[in-house]
Image (cartoon, rainbow, N blue to C red; front, side, top):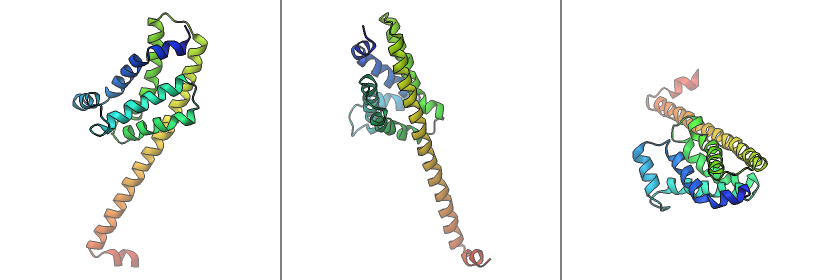
Length: 169
């Protein structure tokens, strides 16, 4: 059996495990909410992550160019980048997919070494894109925080009537 056929057949199982693995990084209460609320408007974070994982998985199976898959990755990374986890926690889900695929291959006793290497190379390339997206998001967050501190300082100096003294020096 070809790898893509096997993965298409096991699609639901892999996606559920992958989604659950992503949710493990959240506190239990949050994870439970994200897992149980399926609707877009009552749970936009869980919905976005679920849909993003599905589109990424489909894109990998269908050899979709990575540039067309990356917007779905971007949606997930933007959510995770603001949640205060470490970069390794935020991006580990990309590498978790590789293990899940290998587990399914072992279960099915499939042997598709060339195909798995090609798929894992695509996952690795997508993980690098995820890292770039993550860094851009974090840079933006730090930029916003720095600007907020500057603005607060400026307003504080204005209120204290010290702006003339600072500008005059």
